[in-house]
Image (cartoon, rainbow, N blue to C red; front, side, top):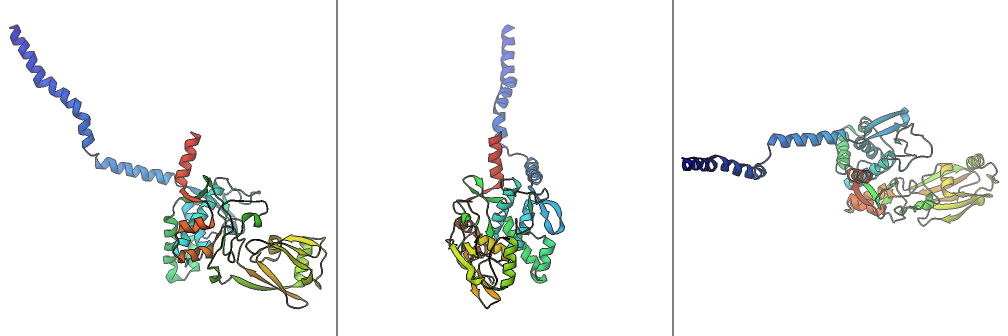
Length: 354
């Protein structure tokens, strides 16, 4: 009887318990081989989309002409900047370079890396005054300024340039750069310290900028009444000693920069910076020469348009026409920089803080 009982127990173990042990031991292998449920994968993708949407970066913009602050997605704002800052018929790679520069400029101000001394943005991150920040135009107004037959295609071209550089910004030694730009430099960009005294920026160095003469405003001649110039000088510098009768003879260019722009000059008994004289008369650039027309008038010829520091927009377009990519254009005008994404940068910064 004992033998039969032992035999029964043994058979029970072989038939029932052992298979259970084997199945449990192999269960992880089976799970690894079988693909995840398609619905679960779709759910994951939807979660990623929701995370991207929820984490979309927004910027507060002070729209100066309407005197309001408006919050908008950063990438939408960049489209408006590119549309306002660069001719839409420029090469796609030039538009991309502008998009990256504009995004970097905006991001640096959103993060308070570069801020104005006074709060002239009414609490916003940036303004639409091109003399202070970047120009910007809303889509509806941009479409109106173009020919109706080309408007839609023009906007799509700008959208494409922004989309293909989405989230990209410029860094120098792991820091967000201040990528200032201008229309055209007159053949050579400026060192930052030659325009903003004492401000030495390693990536804002003078470089040759070819092809800019294609711009209609490359060389501009403007006549001024001597009487008007003297009035403006005395309004700005009340103690200056100068007269309209001898104005031309009392103007002396003291020093020019490496790029040929007026760095300092003397008028009467007063020494001025070239930037001060440019601002006083509203000149297109500090690359100017002065001629005497007659007893009452002077002619000032300017070369280029803008402060001349950083990327030349017309120069960027020329380089794009020659086959340069937007990365090559940016690295030419901003020496020593590299391109990274906002997402990567913020991940690194978050990691350091945690």
